[in-house]
Each structure stands twice: as C-alpha cells, then as structure tokens.
Length: 212
Image (cartoon, rainbow, N blue to C red):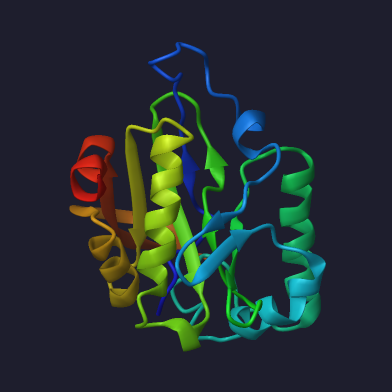
C-alpha cells in the first residue's frame, strides 16, 4: 500500500527570517507552480484527469490505509477534482497531481493540504497508483516536495504519518531522509475507526546536510 492519506495534512509557516517578510499563502500557492523530477511532473489536477484518478482511487489496495474511501464511480473522482479545483481558485494550499512524463498520465497526488501558520511545520501526504509502487517514484516526488517546503515555504520541520502496517509508505519516508519518532495512539480516523499512526519527520538542517 502506497499512500499515507493525502487529505489529512498539516502545514505551518513562519516568516522568512532572512527578510523578515511574512510568507503568505497566496504568494506560495496563488498559482501552484509546476515542479519537475527526473521522471515525473508535479502540476495542477484538471477535469481531464478524472479517468486516471479513478483508475487508482478505485483500487482497494491503494485506498486500504487512506482516510478517504475507495472511489466507486467516476463521479466520486470528479467530485474530488472539483474540490481540489476550488482550492486552486481560492488560493488555498492544495495538492499537486503527479504526471508521468513518458505517458502524460496522472498517476498520483502529493502535497500539503492543511495550513496552520504558527510553528514552521508542515505535514506531507501522497498517494500513488499501484503500477508505480516499488520503483522509487514515491521517494522521488516526496524529496522534491520536501525541497519546495524548506526552500519556498521556509519550513523548519516536515512531518508525515501513516498506518503502522503501511510498510511501503513509511519506507518512502525513510528513503526521503525522514526519521521515525514513534506511534501516535488512536490518532487518525481511518474508514471511521480511530487508529494508531507512525510519525516521521525531517528538519531543515537535516535535509540540507543530506542533499546540499
């Protein structure tokens, strides 16, 4: 299983200490930037992505540990896209779609979804279509998103959570340089049942030491 529940994500941002000018949400996400990795393109989700989105969101293995239910119809996926497009339109924090550069198909989502401006902290979420598991794609896009958080959003700490049995998800966190901090007991409602989650994090100075 390769998702940690994208829609339950926390982002907190403080001023850029170099300039002392507060980071504003509309400055960062007013026009969601396109990000590139070697194999993937992170860009806005559009209505034309509905079939690709439904293809993986209707997969019970993909949604096994997520907070969202398996999509039963294409209308379910279209409703999700309309919600994300509304976030884009109102300049709120919203996820990127993950596009395979070879096929131009949407194969997942990654990003920051919930904003809280007081602790320079963000929580990362992602979901990926099953044909792309175990190929390093998750780690690739998570590292790119972490870089955006530290460089553009001026974060100090980035977190991610997943179900304790979601081995593929926490392996991505580990490969992206995040450290295991412990279990948050009965922390998150998954399919309407509160369950334990594993907590991982990485600090700005740790990321800089690893990748710069």
